[in-house]
Length: 254
Image 1 (cartoon, rainbow, N blue to C red):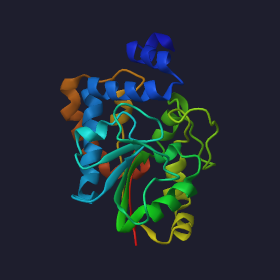
Image 2 (image 1 turned 90 degrees about the vertical axis):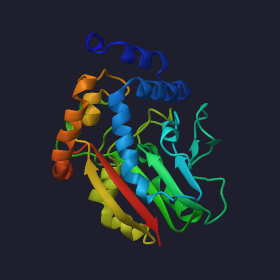
Image 3 (image 1 turned 60 degrees about the horizontal axis):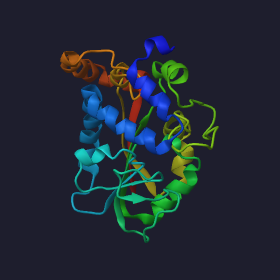
Image 4 (image 1 turned 45 degrees about the vertical axis):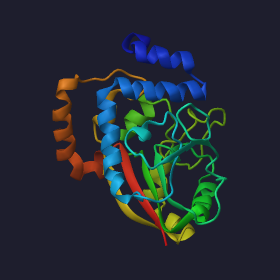
C-alpha cells in the first residue's frame, strides 16, 4: 500500500492518532491542493445563501479553520483545540443561552458524533426560531459505497447509527450516519424532531473528492484539468442521488 501513497500519506502516518496535529495537517493539505480548495469553496457557495448575514453564526467541528478563508461572520468551534478556532466546546453542550444562534455550520462533522440525539436537542435549544443547521456530509450511494468502505480510513456501516471506536475525535466516525438519518430513516428523524424541517437537500460530488485524493492520497489529476472536472460534475449533478459521494442538508427550526 505504501508504494502507491507518496509524501502526503507519510505525513498522515506521523500524526496519526493525534487529533490536533491531524486537524492542522488537514488545513495544510487543503492549502497545498487546489483541487480540494475548489471543492470546499463549491460547498461554501452552495450553503452561503442560507447563512445569516449579520446574525450569530457558529461552525461546529471547524478543525483547521479553513471556512474562515471564505466566511467572515463565523465563530469557529471544535471539541479539539487548534490554533485556527475561536472557541473550544462540545456540540452536545453548547456554552450558549437558549434561542441565540442564527446558524450552525457543519462541514463533514455529523458522522463523527457519538450521540446524534444530544446534538440535535442541543441545536433546538440554542437556535432562534427560523435558525438553521447547514450541513455538508459524506453520502453513501451505489458508486461511493465501495470507495468509502474499502479505501477510506473512517468506518462505513449502513446498518448502524453508532461509531465503533471512542478513542479519537478526528478518526472515529461512521460515514453512513447522514445517509441513514436523512434517507433510510428520514421519517423517523422528522417524527423525532418535528420542529426541525429539512428545507434543502442536494446529492453531489460524484468524482471530485475521490480524484482529489482527499487528505491522505495525492491528487489523481493535474491542476490544468480542474475546469474539465467542474464541467463533468455539473453534467452528472442530476445523478447525484445514485452516484454522489456527498450531500448538502439544510434544516430550519420552526
